[in-house]
Image (cartoon, rainbow, N blue to C red):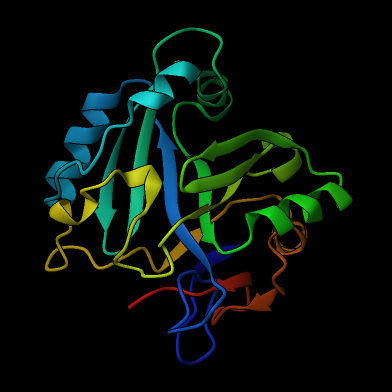
Length: 223
């Protein structure tokens, strides 16, 4: 199954913000998990020539440390556990220490989506409610392939505006000359069509076919 930005002509499962539209659903952030944070951070620096835009001390309450990089107007986050018994640590044990941990969507209506997933028997694992920010994290078992998150930052209708998970100064680390975005992600599954249908119901998006005939979902992505 593939996901990514919605292009001008049909392609694979895509993500981002509509041009001037009132509503949006963007695949804004991908979170990877690593056994140790700094070696993974150094690898991203070396491969892409980017610097960390934000480290969030708030993830410490989950037994994690993290670092975020700006990929155009999207974000790559890496987290690593700092103690035993964390959800991230259990993910590492199951995955062998590699893989996507979360797909995070920036949207206008996380409250509606919270009501929607309840009708699908998908549990909300964590509620995120801070000044200027509201989001829901869905239970990874109910999402199947990885944890999904839907959130809204006040002012984020402007793709260059605030984005709470990346801190106040993310634009300072933006290097459009090096990286312009993450147009597509691929999600492995023993039954890609079934997983695409499940994610499509959660995200309230139809399943389409990409240019290779694989099941795909489309989202909007900013310029």
